[in-house]
Length: 261
Length: 328
Figure 1 (cartoon, rainbow over the protein chains, first blue to last red):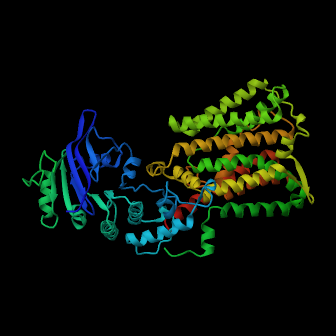
Figure 2 (tube, each protein chain N blue to C red):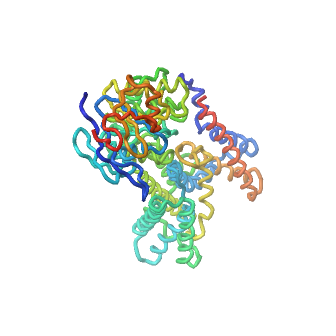
Figure 3 (spheres, helix red, strand yellow):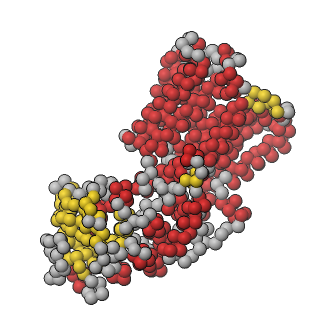
């Protein structure tokens, strides 16, 4: 097994008196795609929000490459190499692809006080990235995000995460509202990201999409991890569905009530 | 998507509509009254144009960031009143009075920005409140009477701001050069710089910008300050040119300035802005005001034309926007 990248240990999060997740542990290795499954309210989103810095955990620890880190906001998560791509990917529709890719980290050309963006460099990198992520159409980097399709927007978001060397890319329902061809495109982008050394956490309602792309499946139910080592190559979709709904006695390694590995 | 031809890209630009409108305006007015293009008329139109224009340039950046400022008209009146009151009372020199007026304007902009970003109150309400406070202060400290400004003659500061010279038959005011310089600098900031990218992102999708580490609040506060300071400079220039610092001057300018900016193609909801468009918008409204008087339409009818232009341009921009979003 490759080197461990992320380890979340005994994470709990409560909103007032409501316990959203409890005693959850999760590991992600280098160049691994982990599928995170669970019914509505199982705690997937809360777990991801904790990891991406959107909400603070009530208790528990997060380790990146074995070092304990403190994630108090999205910028903390990004600086630790954790990038989250939401359904309505966090892009500015009015700005071009290149300007979105570099938003917040624009390269400067010439004297500093002129604050001039190096547009040429930005567009060159953008063109290169779009090819790398697997977009086959010739889309100029100056195209505004607003005129891209949903799948192309996801591609730009994934490309951005790849470029800024995010070790872990969290994809929250990236295939929602996408057509068949678009979905295949996004799954291909995710595989390409893994092949170039990035790890991913892939969250989707559609189990078939998850099966097509992930290396390992983690299932959550009622705020706990109930299975964390399901191999999609050796397990059927129906079996996983039963784990999600609690109709199965399948207990992966570190099963019910004990998410720790 | 294949590369569009130059013609297609020109048509897609938001500045094309206002540009055509300006040409049509000039052609119609000149056809009806050739005196419209006389050097004297052009000089007069330009002199007054730049004072509102300076405010419109700053407002363009502010509106691109998703906010607007209704207090600019009151600052236009208040700042010269403050400056001339300090000077006429012999408290300070003109230069110091000028600096004090600008610093006070900057502080007012800062307060606007803090209310909007920290307390999350819509800029409409914050700057409406500030409008009343500032205008009220101007009226209160002057008892409603205009301040004397004729001591300005010969002062280097006054000459630098509004001194005039002739290029051939054209009388050019220094303020025109300041307007041109401001347009170039702010156009550069908006389109070429990192700051410009942040301004557009703040207005387009503040959440996304924040997630990328863009300091949205600081960007907006800086633009509120810029807006107030530009309004103060415009008011001071106007007071020197007309030899009057009237606490009531600038009333209603905020709406005219916002009209200029949106006619030029800047989005009212933020995210997209154009300095070239604003320069065209400023010229369209000023030429209209001047032209309808010259061709004999009663000046009182001015607002009918302005309103019609605003409605027409908004319809055009929304049409273009829809085609743009459809990806064609």
